[in-house]
Length: 253
Image (cartoon, rainbow, N blue to C red; front, side, top):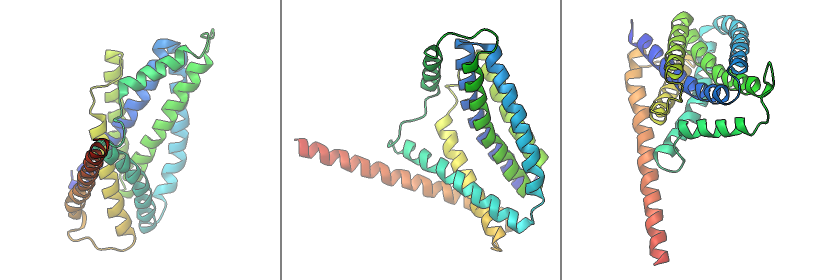
């Protein structure tokens, strides 16, 4: 397996694991509080809808000329990657609350309890919330797998990495019947933001006819470069926040 393929598998697996953890939290909260049957029905319908989306988008992406595909995929990865990275930087700098899966589970559970009486047969609330959570998080899984896979002309490898991530998370979640709060989700989101942004820069550059020194080996410089830049921003923001707090204390004194 080449270095690019290893990077593809690692990026897809980590990113899809994060999405799967968030979807799992929603389904566990609704199922445990209201109706497992309705919640799992919503999951099943969402998976069917995602299969249709995948079947429609997959061939369309792979049919694009390679340079057009790389620019399009690189641009999309930059959009998603920079959004992930921005939130991760703010969390690491203490300017945004860390994502807490246990708190998210508690909030979803409380909302499910306040949604009224559980309906006989198919509980509409359980079905809709599970469907929405699975479909929306699943869309990002599909997007990540298709963009990485189509650009490298290896959709099966990307799909296998995404499926493995989902199966690992779902298996762990239903084994303990609780949200995977111990997963270092905030750190993983930082890593995913770095990876998506790095691959976006690399592939968009290739599509625009940029010549990277060493070809795919250039990723070994791009990825650490993006990571160091992001960590530098975190350091600057922390310093600015500390200076602001010190100034506020002086004013109060």
